[in-house]
Image (cartoon, rainbow, N blue to C red; front, side, top):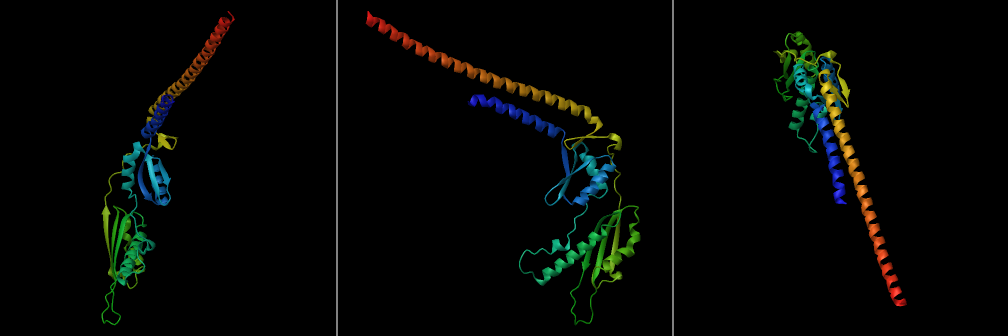
Length: 287
């Protein structure tokens, strides 16, 4: 019985290997993961404007973005030139997660200042053409009975796309920061702008390429003929394997029938010999 099962096992392994070859040859690659769904949607829209199809993979807590393997390098360069993926900022809820039951006053103060700076930076990063934004806030711990009170201060770092009118928003930036930090005045807010010259956009797939989608995989016009040739060859090999499996199954059934017939013939022959011997003894006794 073990010898009859081995051909089936090897045949199934061959079919599985062919499907794995198909998926690996015409698969997709994950560009970025652990992203928010809104950010993935923006990245997909940007890629589609340059003729590259992106796929959103939704997980339990985050999303991922994948593209066809042929467009991997082009998609990475394109998204990075537009500042994607966006910088990650901690919110108030992220920073104030306690690891223990009781926190010291100093720990609570540092957490508050850090979370406040991160929240303001997140707001500033939403300004058009701003690539990165960081805010450093200093809130002195003044003695209420002291004669001189040290005022709060803030330093703002803005990296923006060159030739964008971001520096015209200095007053608005100071207004946002001063109204977010208690005891902060506009003259105590320093804003530093850093223009960044981005590399030229990479050459993307032509929008009129009209790719086709097969099992979630985008196939361009240039790859259609090799793809269908590969599919046809694989189907032919699969049909040959199925035919070989059917032939082995039929041959195994035929061999079993032949063995059964041989056993039956031997049984009949064994029954005939004793009967002939008994007839011979009966004749001798009569004589």
